Image (cartoon, rainbow, N blue to C red; front, side, top):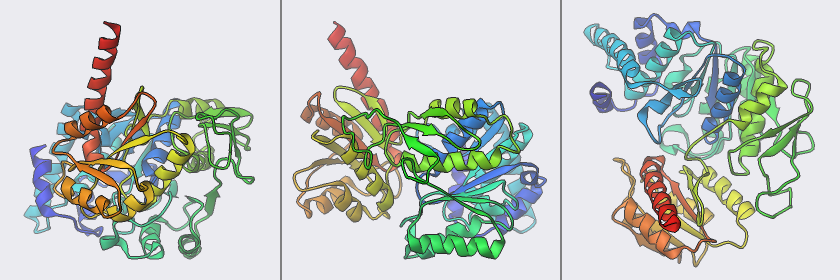
Amino acid sequence: MAFLEGTKKYGSRLGLDSIRTLMSELGDVQTRLPVVHIGGTNGKGSVGAYLSSVLTEAGYRVGWFNTPDVFSYEEEFRICGVPIGQERLAEIFTEVKAACARMMARGFFHPTRFEVETAAAFLWFCEEGCDIAIMEVGMGGETDATNIIERPLVSVLTHIGMDHMRFLGNTPAEIAAVKAGIIKPGCPVVTVSQDADVMSVIEERCRECGAPLFISENVGSENSNIKNGEIGNSGNKNKENNWDGIADVSSKDFSNIVIKTNLHGIFQQENLSCALKVLEILQPQYPAITAETVADGIANTRWPGRYEKIASHPDIYLDGAHNEPAARRLSESLDADFQGRKIHYIMGVLADKDYATMADIMFTSGDTVYTVTPPNPRGLPAEELANCLREKNITAVPCLTIKDAVSCVLGDATVDDVILAFGSLSYLKEAREICYRWEKDFKTGKEN
């Protein structure tokens, strides 16, 4: 871990030359792995979680690389859903460290932190004999270290929106062009319904590469192979804006079954549809993917920190929405799930995010927001975020610590209210631990 911490000083360098040299030092192990490559702005982790769970349920040995971590560093590296152990992590990074030293001796730049992590993931999955690896893009796509993959089984592009503009571009089309760089000649591509300018970029890239394009239809749409269930979770039966996580699947490969997911939020309609389309494409090569393993795998999918309910009375949710498109989807889910209920907010963001636009999407005049400073070098000070919110006539209370924010919001909320802590993933671990302790103490006190 000290070695990994030391790699931060090498910053971030977009491009594939360094990762290619590093992987060469490690025997180009990535060429031995069948890979599903996932890019996009939001939803990458959810789609990866669904795929990992279903493929594991089907009996395959599944590697999954996903960043950033939320609750422990080891969770960035999983096999069959289980994070890497600390001793095994040390062994893998020792091998990567030695390869970096050999590169330096030959006059090359030292790889960046993300390049080191990407190499470690490939190495571990190969050494453990994974049947398939799910690799998530770190940022962008074309020049991301994971894009060393030459022949993915499927290239996946989840919803694309405005984020990382300093590196990727100032319009959705410019950002889409970078993210579409993971599309490879002749390899199938799965994407979701995108804005017209984004979709045109993806379609053009697929034409150039001769890559077949599959567009998944959202749950509940007329053209979807997935239909809404009948039971709502909030008393709102309007199926245009409410989804209970239950879906009937009637496609050629997955027929006459009901799928239930424990992942909350109407944005999971899109992510689930995307994952199912990928599984359909994989099924001929992975025949143990059946209607039953799909249903069980989706039902068993867990994705902590993403619209995750962690306590009741009041209901407490955590969500890692940290950019404009994610905030928009989170707001839509709140409107669908909690009409007529008061929502109390905790918000912490990084300074390089468009937090002013996020505030416009999430809040209305009269809302109360407790602001926190995420434990990240790029964390926006709580006071600065509070000032931004006050300019929008939103009641904002800056808190010195995350514990203070949780204590304040619990003091304000009634048992019928909803509490949402959202924004940067970097502070959700502490918020979750504090809320867990509170709920345990609350229940103990109630029993006594």
